[in-house]
Image 1 (cartoon, rainbow, N blue to C red):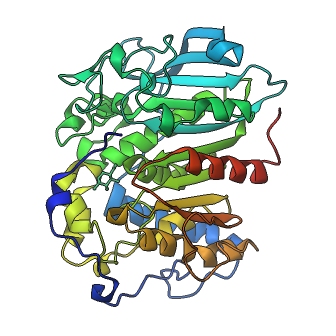
Image 2: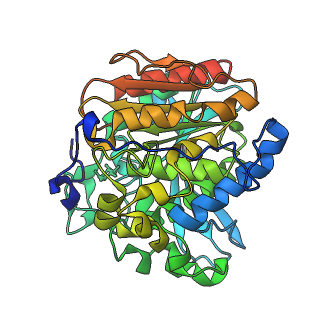
Length: 413
Ligand code: GCU
């Protein structure tokens, strides 16, 4: 499977636990006045304070809905996937004018659904057509990163159909009673340093009342996920109170940021999200703040670069981002061969979000040690480290489906 190989992958990285300098994590419960949050009621205010710190120092502003947001159904096929699913394609148009920037949502629902179904939602890397070989899926027309089969000169052709079926497990989802909603992240902002110039940070600057540099690519992707949710709320076959947001890697970072801002996402799943995602920034292991800011300057705001040399100066760390999911079920996953993402740092991110879950009388992760390979742990906060490489695969999806079954009390089947 193709994956991005950033220049930073060539930079020397530390993989020695003994070389991690001692660090102290900021306490998510410590308020600005020095007092400690002791109740879920008090947490509401603290939650906003932490969210604002992430806006200022890491991901930038998060605008609300754009005026005139419009949903236009482009196609419906009620006999998709050999009659097992309904396929809908919807243009989510960011304005009243039909020429406004838009994002195309691909939605599959189990044909047998008698009542609104829970849905997994997430962005994809190379276009909706890569999710399944289904020939009815529209090809994206915009910029796509070169690399995968069927992408030439940054344009996708039919040969890219089904390029990442393994990463979506669509048939499995449908057979277990779930829907899938996905969109191509490049519809929001092409993922390169100049991408903001043609992405929504520029094209919607006026309508959102925000300058491009006030937010980030991760912010733009996350914003798109909230607009996807706006659409899902209008879809009668979808149970919008049971949307599980998933994201792999950079799109895991975007999923976390989306769910931090938008509590309509009922479950949040971070798959190998690493640096700038679930992994603690203060741990100098694998990718670092400096390296990510150098390879992907557009992902975060300029302010984040001030912490390149010393992440200890950050007023936040990623356990606080994970804490913003509370009390919602949260799943953090790592892979053994994905040391770049710092599996232990991801585990510790989830672990140190625990005190906030406890305010809601939820145990959080509930274990002290990192579990063995392929041994999922936890209840409201769950974690696994799977064998194999940086990816999202059938094993990961099995765990996420079991997790959703548990927290959504079994899907309407
Ligand atoms: C690079 C990057 C990571 C990112 C990953 C991905 O490896 O350094 O931060 O998560 O790409 O998105 O696949």
